[in-house]
Image 1 (cartoon, rainbow, N blue to C red):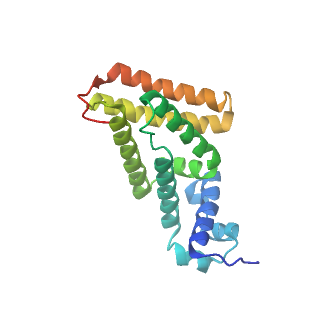
Image 2: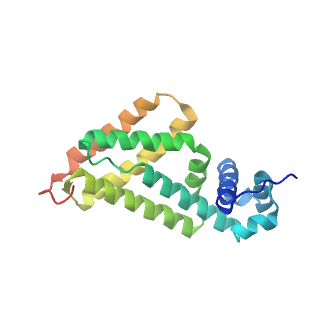
Length: 197
């Protein structure tokens, strides 16, 4: 096996990518750490220098993916709310399309027995909820929070389904998701006294 010398950061990224590809293709329990090392072109010992266990690697994949999505979907404060929402949705879909393996691996984490992986996803969902509610400029309520959380879950599920089926264009999917969010807000929100921006 020919190995390429990489910086520690590049090697870590390589291992995360190899793990994501395998976790996306098969259930977590069926993926062996040796396979991940082979896919990355490294020894098992080298992999263990970066991740002590398969579960630690899996959690790192989930954490990285949620952080990337959060960073790339920040709303543009200079745009009107509806245009800002549309732009963020487009970036969300584009991120999922560009990193389909990681998306599918993270999707597997949602039904995983790993409570830490589920906690990472729950925290990421809450951060997105808070940011959307703050950007909408409406009074927060339990009803609206539940609606926004449901919208996030729907948008995620629709995007994963779209990756497999491609029944509509990416622009059409962005329209569907953006319209759904704006409709939910119109139905369930009360304008705030500029408490949120």
